[in-house]
Length: 223
Image 1: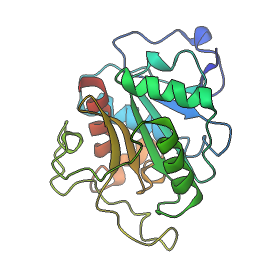
Image 2: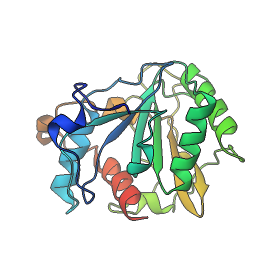
Image 3: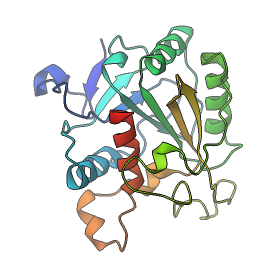
Image 4: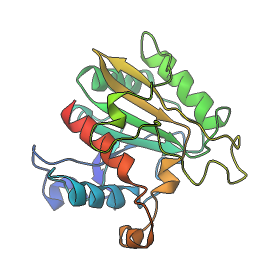
């Protein structure tokens, strides 16, 4: 069993999450920089508490792709810049995670469609699922209306036109559905960097840029 908090403290030492609590679980994979953007969890958890009545577990939990406890979480966050490679066993566990109603949110920090993370993650999804293609989500997909309403689809990030990546604003997200429910949500928009700041600095922003993260959490917990 390899279930750890962000500081690598065993969960048993902190008190295990209650079944009613949302847990921000980050997927650890051996091939890349899975631990990038360390402030995302605290920022999103703060927003879930601020805007909704969902109870949250206050710490990020890090869970390996080979863990027996994957099925205990409705939500997994995955990010990085580098190579994504899973073993056969890890692919099987991730496929079962989705089939049991989990949502894997994979966000590419390179924010392009031809970078190493993008190419290798898409290859892994094709190897993991019978139909591993990831079509674009329509702008009226429920994830854009699960709490806040985003009429134009996914909100733009400040990182999409910063001179890195493909310098294109991607007006779509992509995904894999199972039993008419989104099981993999895939982003080239670099939400991880967009949300990687101390949650107390949110008050200086004209508009809270974590609201779409709340939508993803609500979708994962209620759909």
